[in-house]
Length: 248
Image (cartoon, rainbow, N blue to C red; front, side, top):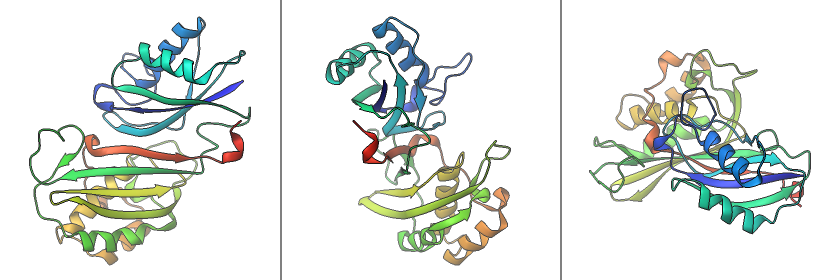
């Protein structure tokens, strides 16, 4: 039987999602908790990777188990084992061919920026003081929409079969007088893509680029021509969409 698990986490204490040698990862913490609870070695498959320091409002993983589990009780007992910065939200039975990574229809990220020093946002938002023109940044963001080769925003030397992604939404929102949020949805994302896009749009918001230049930049496929990569602390994996018929 296959189970999908939704969770949220604060990524500051971890070297990203993926299990790796000599590094503290979210996947390793969860596998240890599941293996302890179910008294056998359990391996999980996540919806994707998040880098060191990146957070998640919603992450999803799946695992297989040969016995039927009671979702609410299992979720409660796992949360009692897991550290405070990882919280499971719910567990659901799914069809055997549902896959946390490959069955995802879209993924959404949010990037938070605050422009007035705030100790309560430290580690959860990027403190960037200079003034930004949100309207210009939104004009530039509209040039991201569509199916394109986003090599110019990708970390170099990554092993992907294609750098094509289809972005369906990209916009900046004024959250408060001194805080803003960038929201982007696509069928898939490249490594470092959102952080590079945000850095490039920050350049635009400071008048260092024009909205029209974003389309030209994408056509170059050249990472060196894009903006800086903003810190991980402001980035959240926000939502993953799956076909509803896959759930039991």
